[in-house]
Length: 565
Image (cartoon, rainbow, N blue to C red; front, top):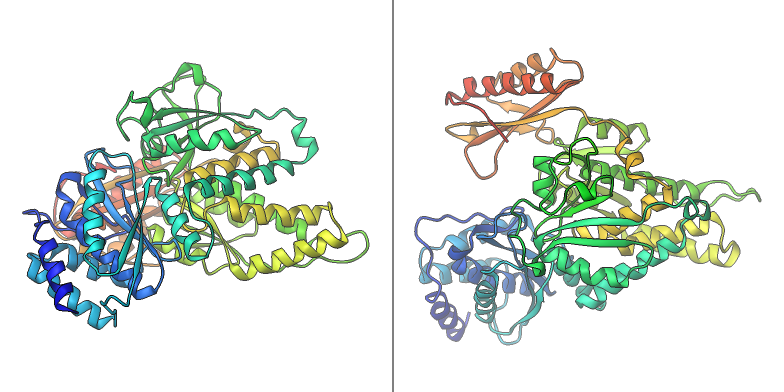
C-alpha cells in the first residue's frame, strides 16, 4: 500500500468516528441499526465494497436500506458480482472493519486484509461499485458516506443508480457483469417484455373464462410501490392499483403496511378495507424483496385470508412441473422431446408442514436449509431449476446456465420442426420465466408478475389458490436465555444436539399431538431461543409451543415467561 493510499484512508476515516456503545454485525441483511448511527459503518462498507470489487475483478453493489424495519432504521449490504449476497467468508472481515475502534486500527486492518487476500492497492487497479438506496430520510447522507469510503481506495469508481429497490440493484450488478444493459429502464423493459410473452401464450380456453385481472397492491409506503407505478404503464392484461406509495405521502414506511406486517399480523394493511373485500390483493415490503398475497374476509373486513411465501412457491412449482411435463411428453409421431431437469424445492424448517407435504405429493424433491436467504439461495443454485421461498415471501427461481443453454437449443429445434406445438410453447414459457423472475435475489415486482401470469394460465381464482392446501395451525414463541450459544442444532436447525436431553424432551412433547412438529433454534442477534410448533388445531399448536418453551427455560436455567414471536 502506498503512502498516498494510507494517508487517504486515515484522513477520511477520521471524519467518520465510531459511535459509542454500538457493536455492528454483518448478517443476511448486512449491517442494520438506527440510521443516525450508521455513518461510520456505511463509510467503511464503501471501502469494503471497493476491496471486494478489486478482489473479484468485477463490479459489486452497495445497497442502503433496512427493508421492512421502521423508518428510523437503515442498513447497508453488499451484492457480489453474480448479484447474490457477499461471500460469507468475508463477513468476519466486514465485522472487524465496522468495529475498528479508531482510524489507525481501521487502516491497519485494511492493510493486513489486502495483503492476506493478495489485493493490489495501486493506480493500476480499478474497482466499480453500483450504489442504490431506498426512500428513508437518512439515505441521502449515508449515500455520501458510502461514496467517501469508495473514493478512499485509489482507482475506485462509484456509480449512483439512484433510489431503487434492493432487487433492482442486485439485478443491475448481475447484468452489468454479464455484459448486458443494466439501467433501471432496462430492468423494466426485461420484466414487461417477458411478462407480455407469457401473457400472449395463455391458453385460449383460459382467456375466455373471464379471470379477474384487477389487482390491488400495498406498496408499504416505500420504494416498491413507486417503482410498480412506473412498471405498470408498460403492462397489458393486468389492471394494477397501488396504494401506500411513498409519493402519496399519506403514511409512514412499514408502519401498519407492508408484507412483513401483513404476514405476521394477518390483518389488512392501512388503506385497505370494506371496499376491497373479495379482490385479489398483494403486499410488498419496504424495499420490495418480499411479497405476500391476501384477500379481505367477507365476514370481517379486519381479517384476511393470507397467501404467504409457501403458497407462492407451490404455485410456481406447479407451473414449472407442468411445463417440463409438456416438454418431455410423447408426440403423435412417436418422437420424444427429452430435456432432463433436476428440480429442487428449497425451504426452511419454518415452512408450514402442509406445504412441504403438498410439494412432496407432487413428486418434487424438497430439501431444508438453515434459516436465512443465503442458505436457501446457495442450495437452490445446485439444481437445474431451484425454487426457494421463505414463508415471509422472500424467494425466487434459479435456472442453471447449462439448463438454459439446452432449453434454448431445444426451443430453436422445435421452432424449426414443430413451431406452435405445446412442447414449443412450454420451452418458450420457461425461457420467458427465466427472464421475468429475478435470478439474483428475491424480487417482489418480478414475483408478482409471475404470480399473475400463472393464475391466468391455470384459470384460477384467488379461492382456487387459497384452497391448494390447508395450512396446519402454528405458533411461534421466544424464550429469554442467559446464553443463546448454549443451544446447538443440526439437520437444518430441526434437531438440538446441545444441551443434551433437550431434543428428547421436545420429541416427547411433540408425540402427544396429532400432526405435531416442533423445533427450537437460537436467535442470530439476541439471547433468545425461538420455538416453532405445529399441530392439528390452534389449541394444540399453542399447547405444544408452551410446553417446549418451558423445557427450554428449564434446561438453560434462565426462568422467564415466554413471549409470542
